[in-house]
Image (cartoon, rainbow, N blue to C red; front, side, top):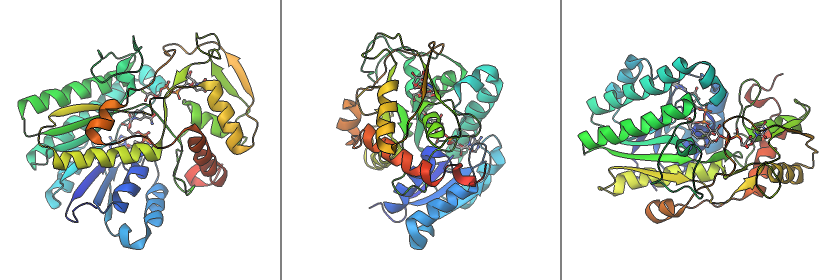
Amino acid sequence: MASPSQKILVTGGAGFIGTHTVVQLLNDGYNVSIIDNFDNSVMEAVDRVRELVGSNLAQNLEFTEGDLRNKDDLEKLFSKTTFDAVIHFAGLKAVAESVANPRRYFDNNLVGTINLYEVMSKYNCKKMVFSSSATVYGQPEKIPCEEDFNLQAMNPYGRTKLFLEEIARDIQKAEPEWRIILLRYFNPVGAHESGKLGEDPKGIPNNLMPYIQRVAVERLPELNVYGHDYPTRDGSAIRDYIHVMDLADGHISAVKKLFTADDIGCAAYNLGTGRGTSVLEMVDAFEKASGKKIPVKLCPRRPGDATEVYASTEKAAKELGWKAKYGVAEMCRDQWNWAKNNPWGYSGKP
Ligand code: NAD
Ligand code: UFG
């Protein structure tokens, strides 16, 4: 259990990974305050978090609608509440959109985060967990990806994550009292086991699992499988899919580390399972979990995609005491449970 006085600000807490993490933080006894501008989320998701944890723990959750690009929104929050740490999810994450509109990504992800550091520093809150991504490994020369590999950005979205990692390292070097944990997520999928929380992307999904889910609920006719001539066991590309509840628990471990270790500096950790699954294996696992047929169309490779990416999990296990518990069967089971109960996402409407 957390100390009852520990209060965590969660930016982007209404989003996919944020909501699942907030549930686990509340269940673990933390006080939580969310700031989100609903750019890619809805209030219903926050209401479902309250419902899931029950009315007692829901009292420990506050919500503010606000935008990190607007420093006043942050000032208002920090001037009335003392935060012990921040988990910073707020950001834009669609790779293709970042290529088409890089300024939107640099403005939102970089300016928003720089504002956050400034206000945190002013109010002497210097503990941060930041959402980084396996995208910072670019096309890894070797697998599994280890945290000390050379980093490389493949697109403007990836560049924002890489810049923000560098900014974090520079800030911590200049002001050694900061404790910053950079969590590099591999491919987050799945949903809360209750079927009440899950991923609800606007428009046509870019990522594999939300796309499969839309085919399963018959909102899309078939899945395009991008690449069937990769040098892998079945010709499709391999990724390290991680259950969002495992990811949420990884954040709890990181927050605990912030409060207990004074020699963290600025440290990066992979959050993955260490296991690779191909696109076609994922389709197969989802068909088994859902009993639905997912029609596939074999298509050319998607530009910029790597053949095979998966995490080395040793550093997180050793230093955070965290390891993923779930495999792809549970990821697909929970994602299907969310999909079948919410075929139109949080809005419930076409
Ligand atoms: P998400 O879009 O569901 O959640 C992000 C939340 O941040 C949304 O609720 C959005 O409204 C909010 N937000 C965005 N810009 C904001 C701003 N300027 N001010 C206030 N709120 C803002 O995304 P997610 O999947 O939960 O991802 C969370 C974080 O993890 C992001 O930083 C993302 O880049 C990173 N990440 C995600 C993945 C993934 O595949 N889901 C992989 C690696 C890293
Ligand atoms: N894929 C398909 N069809 C689809 C969507 C995806 O075949 O409709 C394939 C892709 O080609 C890739 C695999 O499924 O081989 C996974 O693709 P995703 O788009 O789901 O995930 P990526 O590994 O490409 O990247 C995602 C995020 C990145 C992030 C990375 C690691 O989009 O921002 O996970 O966290 F960096």
